[in-house]
Length: 91
Image (tube, rainbow, N blue to C red; front, side, top):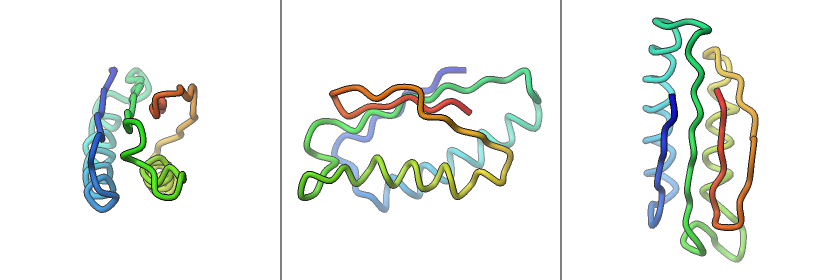
């Protein structure tokens, strides 16, 4: 399964709550389909809108939530970073 998430212009609180809800839905799908389900998620942050004082805030919000909810059965690895402020996370 491939998911594309666009976070252009989103605030950190919005991103956190949406990502937590998405992780819960993916957890249910992972239980139903087991190990046969592979999830690749591309998260796009935009250019400059996700940073404050040149620190990419939204990227760290997403990674922190993925690490925090790792106990739900997710293992994530950061496959690729691109120059446009996007990354691919595999669960």
